[in-house]
Image 1: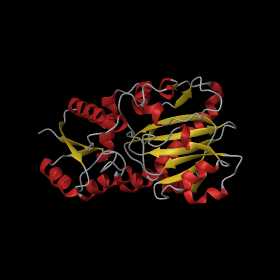
Image 2 (image 1 turned 90 degrees about the horizontal axis):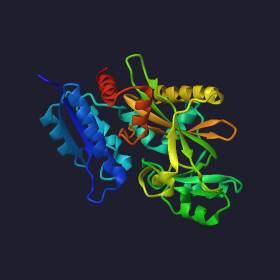
Image 3 (image 1 turned 90 degrees about the vertical axis):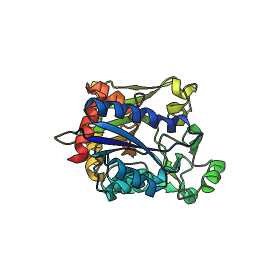
Amino acid sequence: MKRKILIATNKLLPDAGADEQDVLEQANMVGNACQELGYTVARMEMDLDLQQASTRIREEQPDILFNLVESLGNKGEFAFIATSLFSSLAIPYSGSPVIPMFLTSNKVLAKREMQRLGLHTPHGFSVNDTDILDPSERYLLKPIWEEGSLDLDESSVFNGNNERMKGAAGSKSKEHYFIEEYIEGREFNISILAGPNGPEVLPLAEMEFLDFPAGKPRILGYRSKWNEQSFEYTHTSRNFRAREKDRALHAKLVDMSEACWQGFGLRGYARVDFRVSEEGIPAIIDINANPCISLSGGFAAALNQAGYSFTEAIQRILADAVR
């Protein structure tokens, strides 16, 4: 009898944007890869009705769950609950377990854990602490729980002496927003894939901001990821050039990525995002334990650069789920 994979995705609302609908492409890709590997494939959508989800999983009796749940009830802060349910049912599932999912989903908690592990990350501040911001520095107002650069664009960048933005930040919920030191410099997105001998850091991707006007923040925001008609989308590109002058920097980024994997207890696959200051100092700005794996995303691009097929990657992710 063929082994069964049950692919779990979050249930989309009727007005779901491009960033949310992307999960459907991921589910199709994973389903096709699993069929190539000889599995029977079923799919389910999840919302906050966990009893219904539990009943469906018991009915399907999968050998492995493939977790593509990016939110529940359209809220990123509930995404880790899917892994809690899967764990409670004692069924192997893809990707990282409950605690790493929770820690990395909350950017403030992730930052504290990075600091505990000795990993450099930009300074963070509560939205209630705008009075201690340095007037000569720049900052980012960021959502704590959301992924896909939701609520993040150049308007999120502000100077420490900008009273209007400080007031806007102070009006936000401290449970859902925080302020982070803005690092002027380069940005890298680094994908990691589980393997039989441990995690493998895939070729390093640098995001290039092409012909950005002077003063325009060079960040990978929502428009640069999802709005195909925007300047930010058409003038942001990904490259995998391995320049000799960057050899030491790349080695450091690899070391820090591996430290994130080990320190946070990541599994299956993950992505670590960095900013590198003009002085060449790398800082971790995000750890994504459930990154986008659609064809347009950085993970698929890194796989291609490494010479792996998508099906090979899914095979390694599934193997790590039951290892």
